[in-house]
Image 1 (cartoon, chains in turn yellow, orange):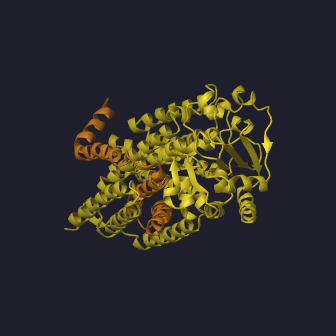
Image 2 (spheres, rainbow over the protein chains, first blue to last red):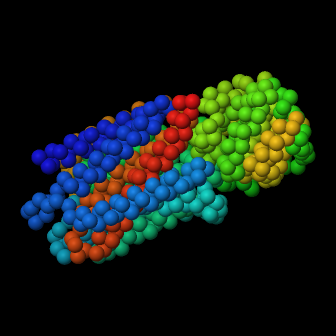
Amino acid sequence: MQHLILQLSYLIGSITFIMGLKMLSHPDTARKGNMVAAVGMGLSIFTTIFLYRYHENGQMHNLHNLVWIFIALAIGTVVGTMAAKKVQMTAMPEMVSLFNGMGGACAMLISMIEYHHMSLEMVANSSYHPGTGIMLVIVLGMMIGTVSFAGSIIAWGKLNGRIKDRTIPGGQALNFLMFGGIIILAIMVVGGFGDAASQGYLFYGIAGIAALYGILFVMPIGGADMPVVISLLNSFTGCAAAFGGFLYGNPVMLTGGILVGSAGTILTILMCTAMNRSLKNVLIGSFGGAKAGPAGEAKAAGNYKEISLSDSAVIMAYAQKVMIIPGYGLAVAQAQHICHELEKVLEEKGVAVSYGIHPVAGRMPGHMNVLLAEADVPYEKLLEMEDANDQMSTTNVVLILGANDVVNPAAKDDPASPIYGMPILEVEKAEHVIVNKRSMKPGYAGIENDLFYKPKTSMLFGDAKKVLQDLVSELKNV
Amino acid sequence: MDALKQIAIMFLQNYHLVTVVILSIFLGIEVISRVPSVLHTPLMSGANAIHGVVIIGAIIVMGKAATDDYLSLILGFLAVILGTLNVVGGFVVTDRMLEMFSKKKKK
């Protein structure tokens, strides 16, 4: 009976995950979908605590240490809720990465504990072996969990600026070497080479190399590609969870893990498509290598012109159509509210304002949508890239707020550029382009932007929030 | 060879699980493939919360640990905390992102 209820609750849990993901992929049902999945998760967790039984010494036992389990659950819930509630909208991507790392670490620890038990038994009783299949699942879960954990922590650090981009000379060869090493060690452990004690060293050796691999794998990847990496690591953790499901023959872990594994992979590919790059290209890191390349530097020389605040205000006030193109600069400066303010002031003056949203502007696909939604910008004002480009030729003023690579014309006409082929917002079709940036420094991809030197373009330097505040007060005086 | 044979046996014994895996892979692809880019971030975050299901493994490990097996208890305790962070944090962050969209709808 107990077992039946548990299995039924796992079935319900699996169904809620599927429904939840399905609902999450439509704007109207997304929030409910998240709730549905959360309820299914809660149900699966609590039925596991009270109804799960395991076999030991010929008897069935309920789980014990319940007090400690509840204390751990309580700590995780309080800390997790606080962290998630307190985080700034701009810091959302790194938060997701951090939580992903926690999941990876959890999978890693589970495998390590299970391995620890088995190796104790194997040392005590040399004829005992848990079975190659079980060993395979444990090693894979640990390996992938560790890579995901280490990689996510690096991604988190890179996104919040604690860790700088660093290309390690020969890093690629080193990565291949480590990858090969992990596979060989894994085969040795799973295949049961050597005695139990030396296998233990091999097992923890895999953990060490996997952690290093995770670090070096993410380290050279440029910030612009970080969303893709986080999505990929997300699906890794899903796979690690699924191996846990195999280990315990647990259907809800299996479906949940695999669903995320496959959905995450598709999402990763969708993101790559949005940038018109292949996954391989992202991972091998053409961005990292191109930084010192001649493509960018050759064009760096040129004159740009600055525009004053009052001139910008006048141009916009007398325009008919203004398009605002937000980028990471807006997110960093927390300028989404004042940006909405600017939009309202302009609308009062009879200027039509819209937003051109590049799918990968910011640090994550959809980042800008979330940010502007927070500031109450009406949904229908956010134009997707194709629509924005259609309207570009009838737009008088384009105001670029801290976006760079997504408006770089090199993506269209410079085959040598590392971002060549990426679809961009074709701002040069508009009458005037005003670019707000903090300085002339290149964007995240580390390449020069020709746009800034074009005759139509004027530069408006300064922090996005400050500049927008000043623009709003200037506009009120026009 | 023996190892490969054992893996083959495990595959046959867990045939139903393998079926579930294969079907889930296709389901995951099917469910996601048409998503507006607006929802990429919340969806990633929601999926992130769902793989927190790994916490069930952590609960089992900890619930099975003998009361004097301190190493397992400590690591298991840590694993449950990390798993909970993934689940709770993941769902709450996703909800916060989506809350902003729904607020828009009402006005």
